[in-house]
Length: 138
Image 1 (cartoon, rainbow, N blue to C red):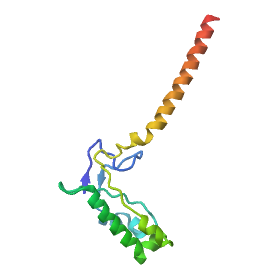
Image 2: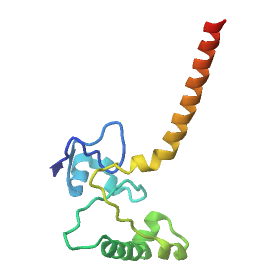
Image 3: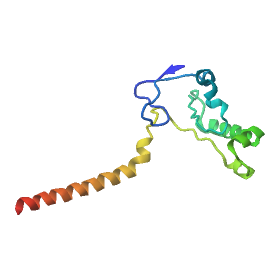
Image 4: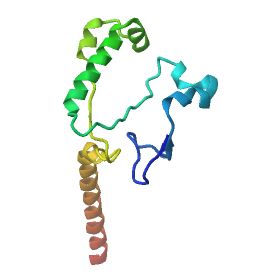
């Protein structure tokens, strides 16, 4: 159980970020028959963790990828994900990314789009200024 800092938004950008987190084991008790843990075909869980000081992210990434592939090779994993092609399972991997700032990588993802939007709005503003200048001259 925990309460996040005001500047921490989690791993996804939503309109109303969570103010506190509960352990995953409490989810069935909180939601009853609508529990997401009872629906294996829904992929809703985003996992965050903290590495011990001397553990490298690449080491953990390889271990988690191995666990993921073993789970997908099991009957339960393949049926819940819907993999009928076993060759795709060996290509699955897990990414370990720094999440200290939550959605801090959002700026990197949207940088090109925002620059294009800024350039287009600058052009529209320039055209509007030129039109006003022409009206003042006339």
